[in-house]
Amino acid sequence: MSGSGGGATTGGGTTTGAGAGSASSGGAGGEGGTGGSGGSPGDGGAGGSTDGKVPPRPSAGCNKANPQTGSAQSPLSVSGHQYYVKLPTGYDASKPYPAMIMFNPTNNPISWAEQNAGFEATGPKEAWIRVYPHPANSNSGWGANDVSFFEPFYEEITANFCIDEARVFAAGESSGGDFSSILGCEHADKLRAVGPCATKNVRDYPLDAGTRRCTGQVTSVVIHGANDSVVGTENGPKTRDFYTALNHCEASTMPVEGYTDERSNCVMYQGCDQDYPVYWCQHKDPNYNGTNHGWPAFAPKFLWSLFSTY
Image (cartoon, rainbow, N blue to C red):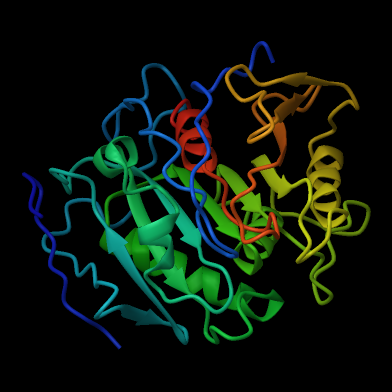
């Protein structure tokens, strides 16, 4: 792709109230898989347009011509991890874009997130830089040992691409969800919001709001299958409770308009610190090989609709 500020190459390298769009119909999905597109996300602003919101924070990569994006077949490498980048349609290297980093589940190829997470739909594809990293060991997935990778990874992508550092988002499914929830504490100074899905408690990095000293706060959308038989139904609420405590939310909730059916079932906690709401989606998307463990159909549209408001 090329834009007026420099192109890119694929060179390889080593509640009512919280309305966020309309509900999606469910879709097919598998364990550690996607629940389908859930419909195309709505229109979002082009990179750099904030309409009176927090001003964009252009990264060092702005105005850099021809950054290497890598690809699923020929990924880039940093700190023992592979990744590749998908740029918005008509990428303009002089304009800072929001970035979505999607962490894939265990035992899946690096291409999983691009093919299944839903961020290659029309809206995100036109407005977001999408970054798809892969764990150092696909068999063990993402974990606490990967935290040290994030700093050099973040420095590399912000040095090479025109990213709005005020609008960097992270999401993930299964072990990728675990990792995004860890980063929402460990690197909250770099992330605006996280969307952890199908999480479990990471033994080497327990999410304890009483003992963790996070680097800031993030908006959090915690997604979990109400009948998840892989990591259990108790683990999603632990992630949720960590963020409601961190953001000083009340116990009361309100339904999210457009996401009240059982395939999404999202609520927004009340009284959270300003600009840092917490959402909880305990869905019953039935299409995960009987496990209810996976990336549900509504997730990409909901996250896109919400995060695009920042």
